[in-house]
Length: 528
Image 1 (cartoon, rainbow, N blue to C red):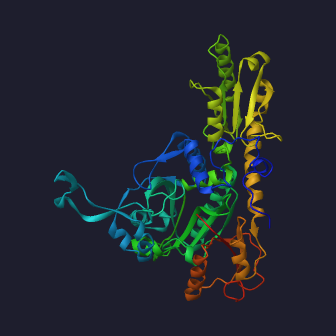
Image 2: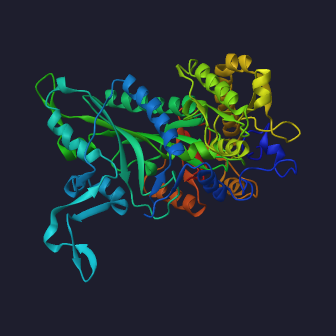
Image 3: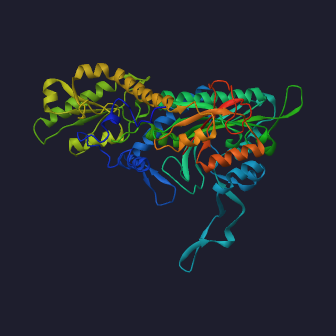
C-alpha cells in the first residue's frame, strides 16, 4: 500500500519543499489540507462568505465552472428522455408529515417559514402575530414530497407512465458545520424524479442515472469514482435502495459525489400516486429520485488542485485558453493586442470536445505576471503570454496548468510557433483532460487497501501516521441491532461505510465486523 501522494506524482509532489519553487498559495496541502482548500477557493476567486452563516456568494469563476457542469450534465439528462421543470421553494409541512421516515431524516435540517410579514416593535423588526401562516412552510430541502403530490395529479393511467422529470434548483439544509461547496446551508443542484409502472422499470432507471453520473464525473469533471449500492444505514430517508458514486480526495477522504435512489412505493403510498393498469386494476407507481450538487466543485478542487491553486479540466473550464498580453505602454502594444486578438479568433474557430474552444484575451490593466499567476491560481488549462518578441518571431509562450514546472523546478513556459500552437490546441486540451483524470485514477486505484481481514488491522491502517485511503473489506450485510453495532464502532473510529462497488470481486471469506460468512465487499473510509 503506497503512501497517499498529493497531486500528480510526476510533477509537484516531488518538488514539495524545494527551494526552487515558490508556490502561489501561502499554505500547502501537506501543511494543512483544510486551510489549503479554503485558500484555493479564496485565491481562485471562486466563492466568498455572504454574511449569512453557511451560505456563500459564488463568484464568476466558481459559478462558471458550475454552469459548465450544468450544461454538460443537462445534455446527458435530456438525452435519456427527461424534461426540465420547476417546483416551489416552499413546501407545506403536511407533505413531509405523510412520510415518517423521510421527515425524520430531514427534521434537524429543515428551515421553516411561519409568518409572512414583519412589523416594527420597540425599534426592531419582529414577525407580525397576525400574519402567522395557517400551515408552516418548509424551505425546500429536497422535493420528493411536493413532486409526489404533483405526480398524484398527473398519473391516472398506465398510459401516463413513465413520468421523467428533472429540475435545477437551490435547496436549504440547515447544516451545523459548514464548508464552502462541500456542506453549506444553501446549495445548488439538480434533482431528477420519475414514476414507473413496474419495479424493474424503476430499478433500471435508478441504475441508468447512476451510470450517467459516473460517466459525467469521469469524462467531464475528471473525477474517477466508484459506483455502487449504499449499505442500509446510509440510505436516503424513505428509499428502498440508494446508490452512489464515491470519489477519493487527495487527503484520502471520500466524497459522495452523486446519488440515485429507488424509492419503490414509499412516496407513492404517502402521496397517493396511483394508476389504473392495463387490466383495469389500481396500482401504486414505483418512483425514483437522483441528484448531483455544487458539492461536485468541492470534489474538483480536492482531487485536481495543487499547491499553486486550482487545476480545472478543460471540459468544465469556463475559459480553456487565456491569453495574457505583455504590454509596456510602448508603441509595440497595439501590435501585440492585434496579434492576440487574431489568436483568439483562430482558437474560437476550433472545436474541442465537440464545442468551440473557449479563449479569452485578458485586457485588464494589470501587470502581466500578476495576471499570469491569477490564472494559474484559477486553474485555466492553458495560459498564453505574448510580448513584443513573440510577435516579431510569430510565437507564443505557453504554460500548461497540469504541467506547471520543469524538472529543475522552474516555471515551464515554452516558446512555440503560433501556427504550431493553434494546430495542436485541441490535442493539447484533450491531453490535459486525460492527464488530470489519469493522475487522479492512479491515486484512487493505488490507495484502496484490499488486504485487511480483521478489526485490528483496520484500526492500525486508519490510525497510522501516513494518510490512509479506503479499505475494501468482506461484508455480511448485517441488519438491525448487528448493523447498529457496526455503525457505532465505525463512528467511534470516525469511519463510515461508503458503498458496495458494483464491480467488486465476489466475497470469499468472513465479514470482518461480524465473523459471519460475507456476501459482498464494502468500502470503508473517512469522509466529508
